[in-house]
Length: 115
Length: 113
Image: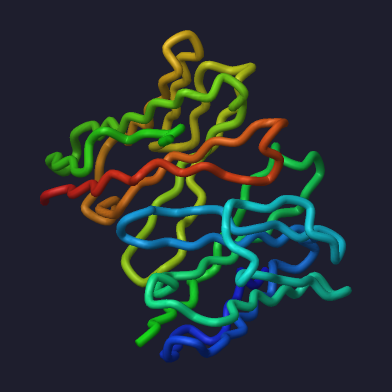
């Protein structure tokens, strides 16, 4: 079974631009979560989508948004990029029986650099 | 407010010996815990999990112990191998946090040949 895939793997943007990241979950997985990893803040939860609906949200500003399609693929968008948005963005998928008693499987991440 | 803490940023052990990685949590609503391993430039890889109804879960060389009263869990790797060298994260979730995983800061494990 193929793992979680994320595209692109690397991105360089400038301040003020917007960016869209894509994630394809493991086949059959219906939940997709997004995390941001930075050296200072560690791994932080952004949001989770399940059946095309945002089911859970972390403490990030409204510039960070996402969506999920009917095939469970998900996209994450960051508008008006700031230098502090430079990070590794990780996507994780899970099968989702109960909402939280599930292992989440991570993709390789998208490394975003904001100049 | 760091709800999940890994107080040791690094740990070095000899090949063949036991590696013990520790994790503490403060949120009593957490009842499901996971360990992930991460290599540079890769996403975290799931290792093992444990729910609060258990105090031990074993999978091959990996064993996780949970002490609910102390709000402490540990990951034991026996025997340690050089390929185990990576950053290890513990993570927690619970019914009130839903799918959100709260991660510790990570511990860099180095296994020396």
